[in-house]
Amino acid sequence: MKKTGFLYDERYLLHDTGPYHPEIPDRLQAIYQGISEAGLLDDLILIKASMPNVKWVEAVHDPEYIHRFEEVCFSGKKTFDYPDNQMCTETFETAMLAVGGILDTADRVMRGEIDNAFCAVRPPGHHAETDRALGFCYFNNVAICARYLTDKWQVKRVGIVDFDVHHGNGTQHIFEQDPKVFYYSIHEHPSFAYPGTGREFETGNSKGHGFTKNSPILPGQGDEEYKHLMERDLFPAFERFDPQVILVSAGFDAHMEDHLADMNLSTDGFSWIMERLVEMAEIYADGKIISVLEGGYNLDRLPELAKNHMEILLQK
Ligand SMILES: [Zn+2]
Image (cartoon, rainbow, N blue to C red):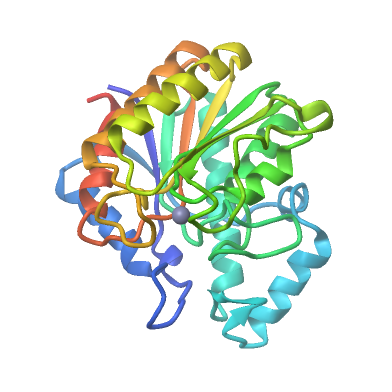
């Protein structure tokens, strides 16, 4: 069995998006419940939220954006720039605590205290751009973690796999010129789904050309198409890139019973994906894989999806 970290904190529930929003605190509670009712908590190393050094947030986001986010938040406004970015006065601190918890988790993996981890945080991150909150995302958690690994821990090659049903526009744009970070995303085709980026021809640019790979999928497709595209696009790309650490943008909204998108991935399909990612981490990254929650909105399916995700990390 692996030494697996589980980042969870009740303070991640304090980001309140109001009564009509899909990205709600109940999602995290469903995830925690699935993991705890399966009896997995005793096997996990529990990690609590912490505040990050703001310089690591500034390594990805413009200082003026961070400042504006803080000011709008404390002003009591209910939205930030776009109507789907609902917020409350605790949103800024919650977003900071998510980043801090993830960086603490990354330190523990790099120090060898734990082998791998799942970070159940809110708000999610992969749509956040350097200077804009988008799609329920404020700070790009995974991007900040990748930058932290390259800059603080001198990791030369970080591989990011994003299986959220939506394309991680923010993560792609932040690293599209950077050959140290390979970004792979498999998502619903941008002609049909938010945010409208992530086409096959988007492959990075300048020094980062060839270090971005997108596998868009047409609506209605499921397990077989995911397997086919990951075998065709991701496996050979990571064989060439040879990541030293793998970060996962783990969104569970491609599930067939999740109604924020139109994919037909089954619960077993999610397990297949995560098993392959853990295998790749063993082959290339000495087992180092850190998974970070993005989307996933079906409260009835999240408990089992989170439980399976954890069991695969634990290799129980
Ligand atoms: Zn999503």
